[in-house]
Image (cartoon, rainbow, N blue to C red; front, side, top):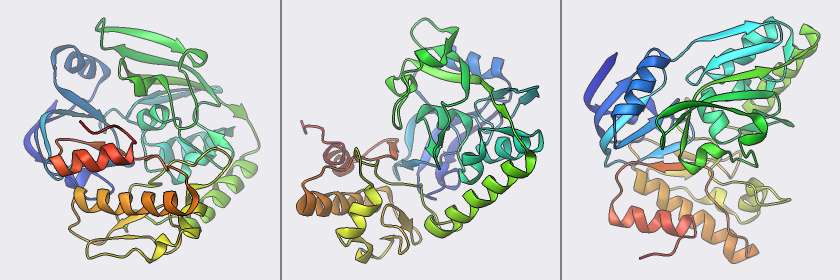
Length: 302
């Protein structure tokens, strides 16, 4: 297993933001992953780091990165995949097998673990639609357990994994047979849509910043509130879609949090709607960052 100390996490994140981490583990098999989960205490599990803001202070504990857990298998309509497999790869491989259900993931940089964690979705599809069961590590009992889809507590950008007790090891899906041409056309349309309304990873970002309020769109509210004009030295709101923050270069986690707070405040002032972050803030926080994050998440400050 690859283990790196005093590791700069910045280049692993799509935001290109983050500090030094005490120790980072890269398990290559599920057994290595489980051994780490059983024996480490103060750890964070991360995948593609595509919907997170990592603190510029870094992290004083251990990080487990699942990027080397790349095993997957297609058996008929069933897909068996490790948590570290990238969504776009599965979208391509299942399309080649004339299997429909993963077309929406073609433009997502995230891993299966992250997609299930947040029940990722787009274009009328989401990761939970075709999920059969999950193989999980139970942090309380330190045992491997299986949960069917109906026990995963899926909701909008939510799953049982967010409660912290369980960590995804691998997942099993049951997709539907369809004409390969139809699947490829849908993938093409999804890629075109993404190209037009979302920045590429060549422009460092972490995807949608805020969740959509019920029966509304965070992007629409932010656009109407005029936040596209928010352009600062190191961060700015993307010109084509108001729910994306761009790292202009050498931005810190504090720069992003301050811009998020300005965006949230503007929507609240004009529409009395409290936007809630979709991205996660990970790592050791300064006191100022802690306060900003608490305000963004509507937590009471101590």
